[in-house]
Amino acid sequence: MAQPDFCSTGKTGATLSVDAARLRTIAAVAPVREVEELPLDLALGRVLAEPPAAQVNLPPFDNAAMDGYAVSTGDLAGHGPWRLPVSGRIAAGDTRSISLRPGTAARIFTGAPIPEGTDAVIMQERVRREGDTLIVSEAPRISLNIRRRGEDCRAGEPPLPSGHLLTAPRLALLAGTGIPEVPIFRRLRVGLFSTGSELQEPGSPLRHGQIYNSNRVMLRALLTQPWIDLTDYGILCDDPGAIRATIRRAGEENDVVISSGGVSAGEEDHILDALRREDATLDVLKVAIRPGKPLTVGRVANALYVGLPGNPYAAAVTFSQIARPALRKAAGMTVVPDNWIPAVAGFDYDRTAGRREYVPVTWDQRDAMGRPILRRLGRGASASLSPIAMARGIAAIDPDMPRVSAGQPLQVEPLLE
Ligand SMILES: Nc1nc2c(c(=O)[nH]1)N[C@H]1C(S)=C(S)[C@@H](COP(=O)(O)OP(=O)(O)OC[C@H]3O[C@@H](n4cnc5c(N)ncnc54)[C@H](O)[C@@H]3O)O[C@H]1N2
Ligand code: MOO
Image (cartoon, rainbow, N blue to C red; front, side, top):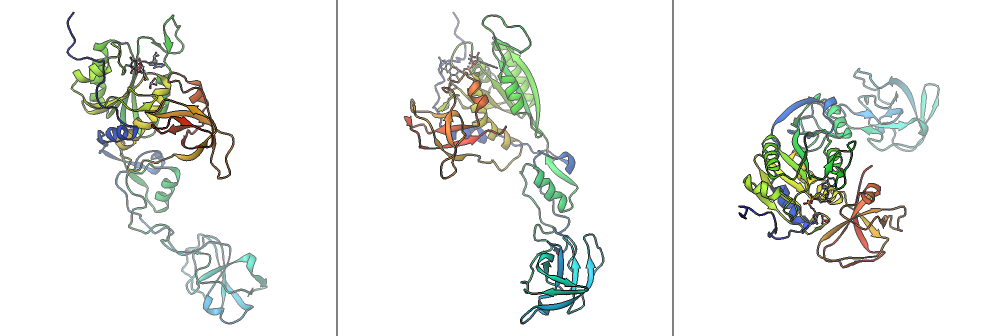
């Protein structure tokens, strides 16, 4: 029998630690450069490209932080109480330039401009009023209850650095500084497909030996982001020609290609052969991660290629640990948030050391320091979906730790509902 030119079995390259695999994957990314302008209303969840300059100071003028009275601290020397005539009334939206007569106070409301000649606002609850006279018993310090012009953001300076994801408060900051439109990176083009002759979509009848495709809907959900433009190439049978053609096409049409299945050692696992035949650069072939060891990463045509393992929990873990940070960088994000929080094990677990292991956990109690006390869900089987479906987080166990004992500190990455 003729030997194949390339062999999918025996991924002989070095086994990389999870951190090394993540760094190699991120290093293989070419971030999106093309920029488009969008009105703020349409920019939620997009990535800021060049930071625009604030058009005005925020706040644009010194203004009152409380409903009360604007006074000059110079009028309140010596010992009180002091009696000041109320000589003006200024509400928010008042566009006059007002100067206060020395020795008097102005009635003022939250957000109203501070009149010339005053340097503090006293809350109305702290004073008494007798007709048109204000009685102050305690002198305020300078600037009390005054929000100074430009203290939040200065005109001409960028309110945000580039590479930030536009969240609700960041859009509010841009609006507050008078910016109507923002330059953002174009959406990241991501191609997705599942491999496996056993796969059927839910809704179709299932024959013996077939299973429903659960990775597709999970990965589609994880990739449904305002900053991603997703193309789904569907299910591919374990046919080398079809897999190779789709890898080539998806690599030409996208910035990142993600597949599930077909990356381990059997001769029905065709991804590695197909990548080699398409002259892919291969950066990651084996990772010391449980589950997810056969994760395969490289570059093919114009794209970063991330071949996730087929087992559903392995696909979920390798997506969150390796694919997601790379996708964020590819989309132009410069900040990769670290969401790990300290926790403690509420379980004992004897394990085989060697790979960093990710276990689905939940918690309903915290210790005296406020750390979640973790309960382990399931047995960590790479094909199981029930544990991760009910998990509040994924806890990480260091590669060289042979045993986890109750009370031991662990890090957990919360999963948002
Ligand atoms: N001899 C070896 N066998 C295996 C190894 C190995 O090193 N040597 N690694 C094991 C590990 S670890 C994993 S993880 C799996 C990963 O295998 P593949 O990525 O090649 O995935 P498949 O073989 O295609 O599928 C594995 C498993 O997952 C099911 N699957 C696949 N796609 C889906 C989907 N879209 N939805 C739901 N379930 C899916 C598939 O039916 C298989 O049961 O390999 C081990 N074997
Ligand atoms: O490490 Mo595999 O991804 O679990 O069975």
